[in-house]
Every structure is written in structure tokens, then in C-alpha cells.
Length: 77
Image (cartoon, rainbow, N blue to C red; front, top):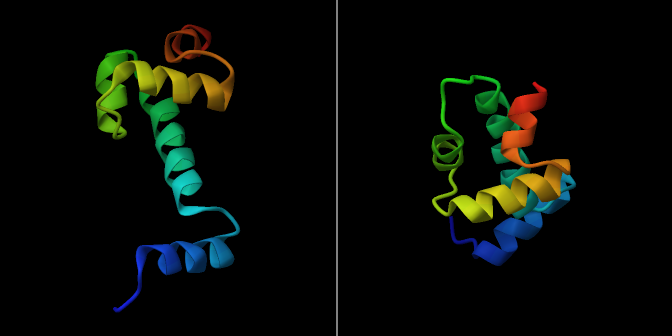
């Protein structure tokens, strides 16, 4: 395709009105909420399934996004 990653990211943001990194994060967090609604899936497994191998980082990103931890989210829903 002969596009640099930087240029591709610029095109993505221009078209989607959100950066590629934020788009991926938002998608992962949306999927994490769906998986957390299923109480049979462990929180650590949810993190791995949405692409976070580092569980503390998954907790941090989730809390920054929603204001509560994944465990608190599960308890509320």
C-alpha cells in the first residue's frame, strides 16, 4: 500500500474523527464490559481476551474509562 504508519493514522483520524489508538481502546473497553456481564469469565481472562496481558494495566485503563474497576463494574451489573 506504500503508506507509513503515521500517514495511515492521520487518514484514520481524518475519516473516523478519533485517533486509531483511542478507537482501539474504546472498542476493547466496550468488549470488556460485555464480557464482564458474564460472571463465569474471570476478570483476568476478560483482560486477556480484549488484548491486555498486563492485568494491572487493564484495571487502570478500565478505571480511567469508566471511573470504576472491572470488579466494581461486575458487582453493579
